[in-house]
Amino acid sequence: MLHELSIRNLAVIEEANVQFHKGFHVLTGETGAGKSIMIDALSLVVGGRGSSDMVRYGCDRTEVEALFDLPTDHPVWQRLSALGIQHDSSEMLIVRRELTASGKSSSRVNGQLVTITMLREIGESLVNIHGQHEHQSLLKSEQHLEWLDMYGGAELLSVKRQYQEQYERLLLVRSQLHELDNTSRHNVHMQDLYAFQVEEITAAKLKPGEDEELLEQRKMLMYAEKRSSSVNEAYGLLNDGQGLDAISRAISRLTDIVSYDETALSPMLEQLQSAFYTAEDVMYQLRSYRDGIESDPQQLQYVEDRLDLIRSLKRKYGETIEEIQTYLEKITEERDKLENREELLEQLKAQEAEIYAEAYLVAQKLSELRQEAAQQLSGEIKEHLTQLQMGAANFEVNLQTLPKDETSYVRLSATGIDHAVFMMSTNPGEPLKPLHKVASGGEMSRIMLALKTIFAAIDQIPVLVFDEVDTGVSGRAAQAIAEKLSKLAKDCQVFSITHLPQVACMADHHYEIRKQFVGERTYTSVVELTDELRINELARMLGGVEITEKTKHHAQEMLDLAIGLKGA
Image (cartoon, rainbow, N blue to C red; front, top):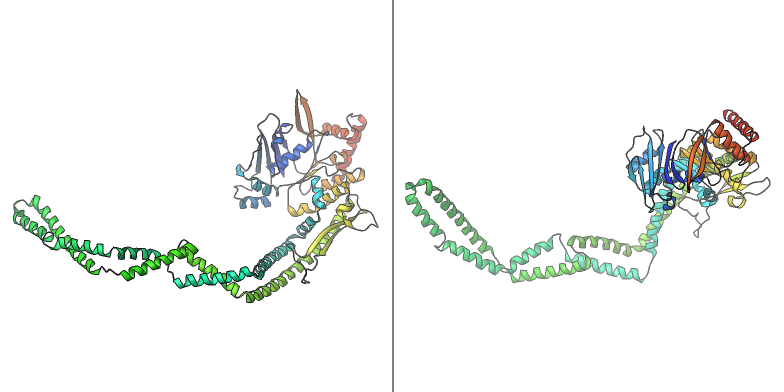
């Protein structure tokens, strides 16, 4: 439930901290007092649209914060986990929204920043606000099937998911068929082009890393003579008496005198000896390397030609040999498709027929479950409408199968083979017609209330808000709406903005929205009414501006009757 709502600098509300309770709440007040602002505040914290116009004049920002007390098994906790928002289901949930005068918005859930999309997704599990605009959504027949599926419960929704999986497979195959069936000169041209490209790349017999190996080999072949000349000269310097022989003579001279000063001469002698052996080993390696150098103009020409071929293929098909090979795999597949087009067409058509048959069977099962749900929903709505003083009305969920397509198959849609329309007749003997053709504003309010009552137990939304759901009704119908709201509040927290005393007296908690003028500014406050204050407000609603003893007596009588009805 909504435990507390804090508002700062929202329109004419400078500051309001309101605590709520379980059960049925009503918000009343004179016209223009700002009752709708409370709905706007609650809408903001669940992701509703905000604008800079909502910021109180002269202030830099609007702040709205809501505190929710929810059971540990409520679906919102799973949604928070999926969104990566830290939480403890044993504690209260804090949702905060800020709007700046420049139009910027920021949102936090349990202190963690969230996007408006995330906030809206979370808010869908917390609060359901019903205003006059929802009458319009109820008139849209394309939404009626969604209402029916929600009512159908877990089994129906499971079958619906199975169908949608099959339908997506069907769309994929049909897309492939359409693409393959698009025969033209372009396809023939592409087939020839793919064949040429496959042959060109395949004939090259490319190997991964081959270009790097060829570049290294090219460098070796190009500088073979220079390498041979330089190595031969280095070998000669070591072997012709100026190299190793000089070091050998130096070793001999030091050997003759090392005994006279071993401390100084012995290390130098060892270094010379080591240098001699190292130089001797290098000389042998140089000779071996020199003998292995080959100057092969034909091999060099082959390497140059091979590199030219690879460069040419890179310009056409990819920057690396790996990319060229990937491209080869792709066009080989495309070529095979075009070459085996007829065979593939037959395979895809057979696959389409098979998937269609499977999807149609699931769609039929889905339709049967919808028929059952439609009958149950129709009966339940009629029962609620009777309780709402519309006993003469007849309501029916009309479920029709979609028409066949040009192939004489039943047309499958993303939702199955059904089209649902809510039908109604308000008077006995009149034919059933779509809602938008027969229902008045007051009747629409009661139909929506009946639906909300039914769906409250299904969607597990803890807070229901009705913005003047009693518009267009009076008398016994208003009393029936009040009783329905009161019963609904036994399963969830219900808020209603109302002008009718019949509705207000049935509430468990009554709040008055008061507007005051101080200086040149307007201030709105929210006051929870009890005892005499509540009697006075009901009397005002009954008799207008002037409150008399008679209207107060009537208000007390209405409260006493309401307490009796709720206790019955």
